[in-house]
Length: 257
Image 1 (tube, rainbow, N blue to C red):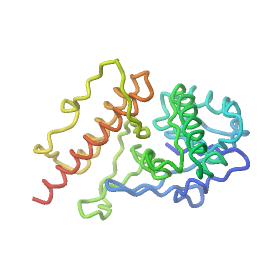
Image 2: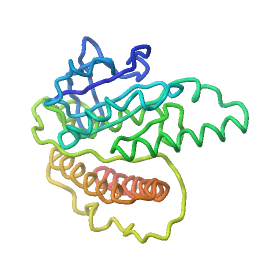
Image 3: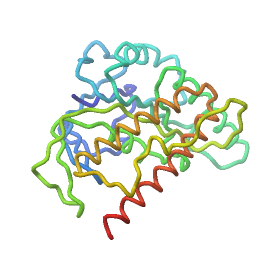
Image 4: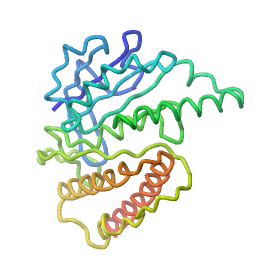
C-alpha cells in the first residue's frame, strides 16, 4: 500500500511539509512508525498512476484556479474510492495568503465553504493549510496517520519504537472536519458511549489498543458522513473529537496509575 501525492504542475509537494525523502514518507506518531512508499504525480499525468495499491491520496491544488481543473483527478479517485482510505485536497494560493481586512476574511470564509461543499460531495476532505480551526498542515499528517500502513512498528508506552511488533491489518479512515458551530433540525445520536471503550477497562496490548481505536474511529466516521448538512457534520465531528480526547486522557491516567 502506498501514498499518492497529486499536484498541479506549478505546485510542489514540499508545500505539505511531510518528511518525504527519495519517495519514502517516514511517519511517526504516538502509536507507531513506518516507512511509506510515496508516489508523486502531476494532475496532468494521471495515466501514470498505479491506482490499485493506493491507500491514501492528497491533492495539492491552487485555489485561485478553476476547481473544474481537478475533475479528472477526482473522477479517478472516485473510481477507486472503496480501496482508498484517506482522501484529502489541500488548497494553496492567493486566496489563503492575504487575510488583512474583514472583507477579505469574509470572502475567504465563503470560498472555503464552497470548496468544502465541492469536495465533501465527492467524499474528499478539503483542508485549508492556514486554518487554525482545522489544524492547518498538521491535519494532513494526522489524517494520513490513521492508515495502518504495511510494516508499521508499534511504539511502547515510553514513546520508543518497540521494534518487534508489526501490524498487518488495515482500517478505514475517519475525517475530523474544521470547527463550525451550527444548529440543525435533523436529529442525531451524539452519545458515543456505545462506541468508545470504557477507559476503566484497558486493552491487553498496544497493538490491540491501536487496532481497537482505529476501528471505533471508522464507526464514528460513518456516522458523521451520513449527515447531509455540512455545518452540522462539522459541529458533531468537533463534539466527537472532544469526547475522544477525554477518552484518551482517561486512558493515559490509567497507565500512570
